[in-house]
Image 1 (cartoon, rainbow, N blue to C red):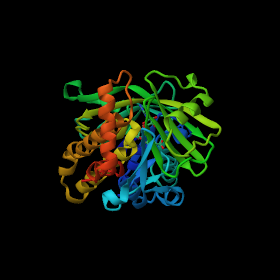
Image 2 (cartoon, rainbow, N blue to C red):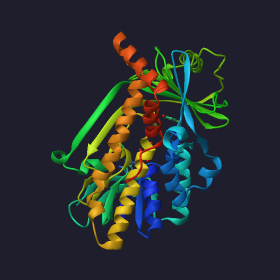
Image 3 (cartoon, rainbow, N blue to C red):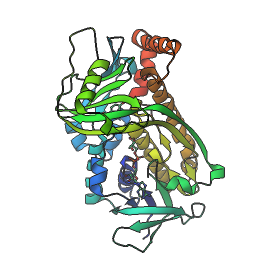
Image 4 (cartoon, rainbow, N blue to C red):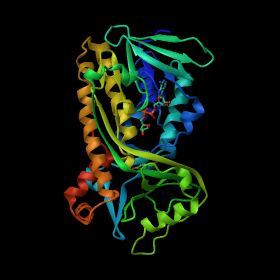
Length: 394
Ligand code: APR
Ligand code: PHB
């Protein structure tokens, strides 16, 4: 097979990149190791920054998002039984976010790609990226049904959108790779429940027993998370135990109540900060989780992936329009400036709201002082609101 851009991975990064390139008249092929059903049902986060909404709409992928997405103008911070709303438009000059699940973004992009785009091969597992330093890189892959036979995709460029456990990053020589990471001694136990959300905006609760988050997928489906010790298995928690613990951590001084309902999905997400530098090696470019991971606290993962692929598509278009590779050459630095701002914000929100095992009384007081600062200082509330609603694309 032969194409201009070989894309490994059909998550949000790979799917949106294929759409952006198609709209720019640049051909691509997407190789996805899993099947369509797996990709479309994989539960991830659900907060789209305004910039992401604008990109999806401009790419012709925003019709259902505009119809079904829920615009949110703020979040509630909860600590010491107090409730403090962070007002996004007031602190950011009008920005807000859209609640629209990543699963839905992927469904919309897959449907468009299959209808109007280039080849999207499910069951095609990339084995290696070769020739990244030549002008003819290629991807060796194993395609379902071709057992015992390897296929090759010849490209002008390869973009690794294959997530944290993909193969693209391995094509960067260890001597050139710089990895920055932090793992956290806790994770999130997440549930989906068929019950109307108990609040009309997201609630982030810091409690001495641990963090809890109330989110949503629709007016009838709640998405909730509970901080649990690292290594926790989802099966360790019975549904009623989860509801009981959520109720404790969301406690307030007023008559607010957490409504319960049937749990339809339960899973544990580990907590990690990770950045691989550089995000480019010759004709190989890394985008999304293939290059960086943020703890989900700030809901930045998908939005960072969008920024990376928009930057690559604009750079390749610039090359075609002007013959200048300057923006391709600046890809890694441009993406990393935004990535590190999101890493800082996600780290800050995670350490602001989670009580790490073994936290000392001093650390508890500092954490509460940080929260009170956000609740009472316009400057501190603005920093959180700007981080949450998103950093501008360069
Ligand atoms: N060959 C082909 N496909 C692969 C390979 C491989 N060797 N390895 C991984 N993949 C596929 C995975 O099956 C997955 O569908 O690459 C895709 C990577 O998608 P994501 O992990 O969703 O990464 P990304 O598109 O960067 O999206 C980042 O999604 O994972 C969340 O929290 C993350 O919200 C963030 C966003
Ligand atoms: C979600 O709805 O899954 C979600 C929302 C906000 C976050 C993380 C996850 O910070």
